[in-house]
Each structure stands twice: as structure tokens, then as C-alpha cells.
Length: 97
Length: 252
Picture 1 (cartoon, one colour):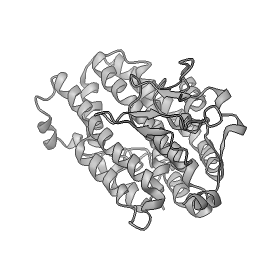
Picture 2 (cartoon, chains in turn yellow, brown):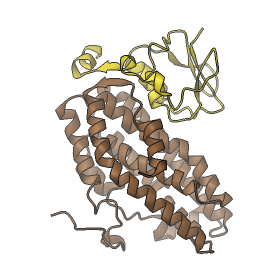
Picture 3 (cartoon, helix red, strand yellow):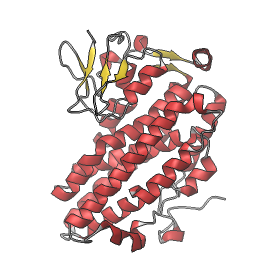
Picture 4 (cartoon, each protein chain N blue to C red):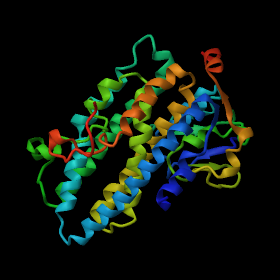
């Protein structure tokens, strides 16, 4: 079961979460087969070990914990501690490409 | 510091998803932006209060005409497509998501133009959007620091616009929040509420691109040059060439 889910009543489908998740090669944000191409988060999501998508989501309340329904946008301080930050360097980006 | 800015920083600016040179660079630029953002919040609060105090309605039309000039289809398509085209075929693998963000933003901006047109139509200032094509106020924006061609072509690097997004879209978010905290007019509140989340997305484009892509001095240089430009005292003020007071000394 996915650990995060998108609240479509609040999400604007801007796709920042898709971009961020794709950038780090998790690819847990997927375009669903709905006519509206709504985004969903699948079981490749490793939250709470990764919280990158939450940092770039602009729509308050649009990504929530699946189990509790707790809103994670804007991100509460406990989900962006130093140990949760994804290392980012020119070398690591080059290696990914 | 204005409480509106403090809240914005805590909720949207400081949370980071990455660690590395891009984030460090963004935080340094943020420190440069904060005093200007603070003044912009103060100015937006003052303007909104003055608008209300005037007891008239013409400020709504003035705001909508100015909004249409910067977000109507003509300006939106030109400015955004220009920036998309700054990515060459060779660079596309590096910036493909940047292109996606900007493609999305074209549609956002065009929608915002519709919101401004709706204010003018529902407020009775025009009958049809097409009337705006003949009104210079709906087709010229006077700030050098806006995304218009004046600041775009000298800063055409694919990442340059990240600086514009970060600085300018933050000012949009802050100004909207400040105005909503004062203005109770349903027409204006509808327009601002409808666009505020998308302005935040555009700010996030800048935040994300700096954090994720500005990883070397070479990547950071074109972005820093944009901040150098945007933070000049004359850059955000209406230019004299379009009827403004100038707002400081012109570039040497």
C-alpha cells in the first residue's frame, strides 16, 4: 500500500511531485489511467525515508499520509530534517544521467 | 519582518528536499531577497488599504488591466515560449522537466489572464475581452524586473528563469496574501484565490530548479546574475519609458 496519497480535491495537478520523484529515480508518482490523467502515488514510495516531493508541492493539503490522512503540505518540520535530505551534487546528477 | 513573510519563509522557502550546492546557493540568494520581499509585503498592504479607503471602484479595473498586461495570452505565450526555446536540443536531456514546468505555466498564465478579464467584464468595465486588445493599459507592463523581454533576453540561459521564478513569483505569492488579508471585495478575492496556488507552483519551479540543478559555479552564475539584476532598486519600479517615476538610478 502506498504510504502517501494525493488529495485530488486540493491537488492542482501541477506535477511538481512527479518531477521531483522522477529526478531521484524513485518514480513512485505515476500518471493514472483516468481521463483526467490524475497523478497517484504507488507502492514504490518509501516515505518517511524520502520526503522530497513534499518540499516542492505548492498546494496546501494535497499530499497526505495514507494511514492517518495527516496533511504534509506545507511540510511540517519533522519531515525535512537533515538526515532526510537527498544528497545532490554535480557528480551524482551526472551519474544518474 | 512582516508576519506574512515570516509565515511564507517557514512554510514554503526553508523546507528542503535536497542537500548540496544548489540548496546552499538558494539560501544565500534568499538572504538577499528577504529585505526586498519584506518591503513588497508592506507596500502591498499599504496599497490595498489605500484602495479600500478610496471608496471608489476604479482600482479594481486598474489592477485587472495591469494584471491582463502581464498575464494575458499575448505576454504569457511570448515570455514562456521564449524561455522554453532557450533549451537547445542538445540540452534537452538535462532540462526536460524544466521544459515541462514551463509548458504547464503557459496554461496557468493564460488562465490568469482570463481571471483579470472576468473582473473587468463582471465589474462592467468592458463587455468583451476583445476590447482589451485596443487598451494600452492591458498590453504594457512597465517593470524591467518582470519576465518581459527586457529582462529575458539578457538572461536567456535555461536556468536564468529559475532566479526570476524564485524572486518574482514569491512577490506574487506575498502580494496576493497581503491583499487578501485586507481586501474584502468578492470580485477581487475570487480572482486572487483562484490564482494563488498556481503562483505558488511557479515559485516552486524556481525553488526546485535551483535546489536540483544549480550544482556548480557554472550553473549558478546565470541565476546569480538574474538576482543581481532583479535586486537593483530600479528593476522593480515602473520604468520612466512607460510613464513610471523610475525608482532609482538607471544602470551605468
